[in-house]
Amino acid sequence: MRDGDAASGLAGLWARGDGGAVVRITRCGAAWCAENTWVAPERRDREAIGDVLEMRVAPQGERRLAGTAWDRRRAARYGLTIDVAADRLDTRGCVFLGLVCVDMSFTRVSGGTAAR
Picture 1 (cartoon, one colour):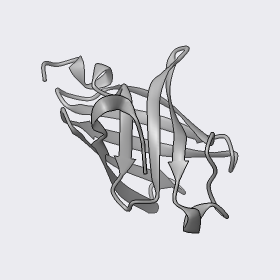
Picture 2: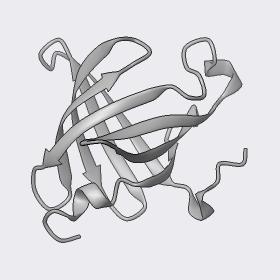
Picture 3: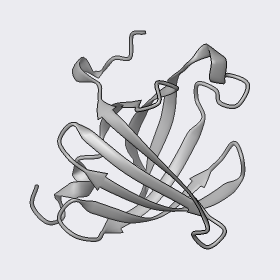
Picture 4: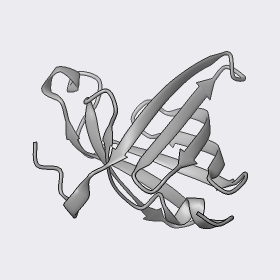
């Protein structure tokens, strides 16, 4: 990827590495939105289809985006970094000034559907 291409690589359907959800990432105004299109049955007490994470990120190098994310369901803001490759996203979301962070990977779903 060339510098500035990282953001354009976000769009698409992504399976979360823990198997708990599939998200569709699209532009939503000036931000990017990741919307749950599928959630594992055992996670439906904490997540729902249609939950949206609004991401406001900017390039921080050739493959990295950094900024903030707003979780509409939990009314919480996170610091966010995303490392973008053609078929993989590696994310880190942090709260409490970076004291508590969670890393998560995503793999691009081919064909654009999330049949599970």
